[in-house]
Image (cartoon, rainbow, N blue to C red; front, side, top):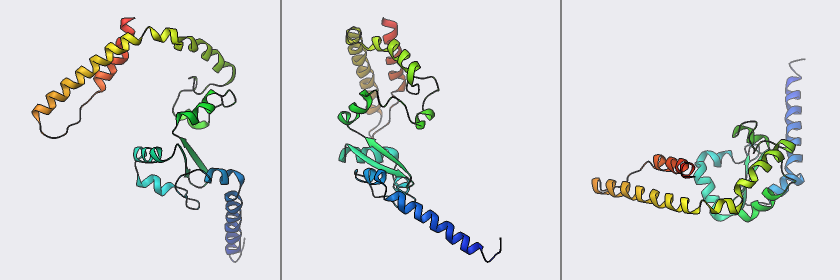
Length: 190
């Protein structure tokens, strides 16, 4: 290729990318996502600058209080829709039509776990697990959970009273040991 043709090829490539972006940004999919509340995305970058400015907790809590559903763009080609209200989640989670999981689930779960499985393996494991969460089975645990929650509150109050008398300012307390005991004691009391 001649050196004189390189600028023409680069201009043509930039034109193709720009044309693709223009068609993509006016597609029905993008218009539906953009109709949801959320910050306005920048071309190509999307909301990456918003994501860098705030911590994930600040971002989720801030948008959660204002809108039950909102969108963010990771670059301009990958939208993420946050649903923060249980009534909006219910039709999606209770439907058999949306049983397959997106590839993002693979990072959070192992291959053979229930959130990843689809089809017959998912149905088989779901049938085995479902009776454990029947209301009659769970009613037997209410007294145990009440007793343990009162024990937990008492232990946390002791820690707070002990730290309050030793210092005048706010301090962090580690509740992990107390909460980890809550997960193991119900199994021991059965």
